[in-house]
Amino acid sequence: MSADAASSRLVDIDTSQPVWDRFFTVAPLVLVGTTDPDGSHDFAPKHMVTPMGWQNYFGFVCAPTHSTCGNIQRTGEFTVSYPKPSQVLFSSLAASPRQQGHKPVLDYFTTFPGQVVSAPLIEQAYLYFECRHYKTVEGFGPNCLITGEIVAAYAEPGFLRSNEIDDQELVHDSPLFAYLAPGRFTSIERSNAFPFPANMKK
Image 1 (cartoon, rainbow, N blue to C red):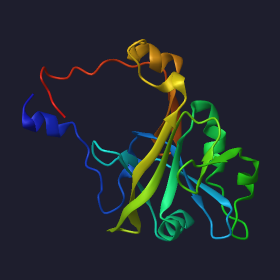
Image 2 (image 1 turned 90 degrees about the vertical axis):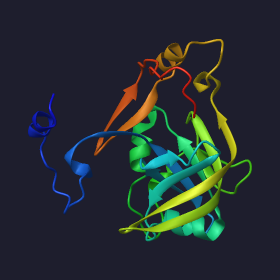
Image 3 (image 1 turned 180 degrees about the horizontal axis):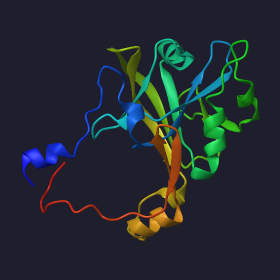
């Protein structure tokens, strides 16, 4: 197909406005746990999340005006809980607005404390990170990128890769929660091996 033929089938997207509501993208969804100044727990659902390279660093997009950002700046730590597809309601309710500085819905969450950092995690998730704040990069419009070093990690055994079980079977038996931004979700139960070129390196 020629370049002209390829471009003729495309539609321009107006970049004078944010583009992200015009199409769907696939992302993980996590609950970032922090501790409020009064010692109460706070969880915030985030989907703009990513490993920060191949080492044990994790990052997510937030906003300086959010309590999550303020709590991390104050305490220097946060947690990350990866919920299961069955926890979509909990994940949604964690975005509830605060009332008098508190999210009442969080009183109904079953949580447990971090082993290394003083921040909460949500029960029944499949993967957990405890992070110490590394650095925050501001300037992405009203948003910032918060990064942390993973100082503790643990998972349910059924979600860990092993030589004893095929990766495809693992995903089938332990489905993953994926957020389809904006505003949809799905359960990933099928996968295929990616056809990497021979001798490819990280």
